[in-house]
Amino acid sequence: MKKQLFQFKEVPDDWALCFQDACPLHEECQRWLAGSYAPKKMTVRPCVIAPSVELTGTCRYYVNPEPVTLAYGFNDLFSHVRRNEYEPMQRALYAIFGSESSYYRCKRGQRAITPQEQQAIQNLFSKYGYADAVVFNRTQQTYDFPVALP
Image (cartoon, rainbow, N blue to C red; front, side, top):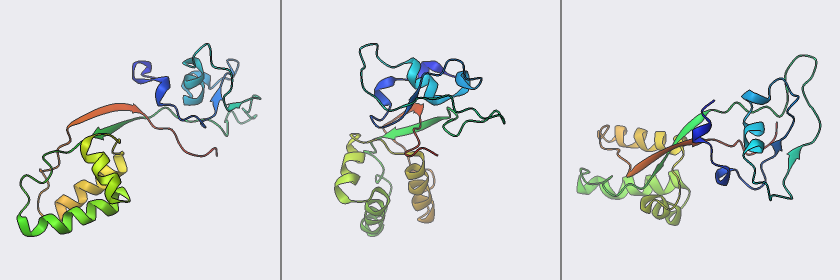
């Protein structure tokens, strides 16, 4: 597990932590990793409160700590795009990001671009013949936090 990638400030506030050191899966679980990085002064937080490892050796709250690459900003994304293709491609990006305002937050690097959004952008640019044009201002490796408990 690459602990150097982990930063507690990235853990969503509603994401359940685990403090079950006796669990045989704890050293390979992202919930336990998050709990081990929790600030000492933290007093209230959702958590897994009972050992949930069943006789099968599995835990329904287990999350494999898979690093993901987030991207930030894309100032030069349209620098090679032909003028007549700019507007339809930009509208397609609005749809990828969910709104025009979200598009601009992503463009300025104020919101992370998820791996799924990165792939959708790559697919869009490939469709128009600009497969090599997708370059982001910066990338960061971090962990993904699944939204809901299993």
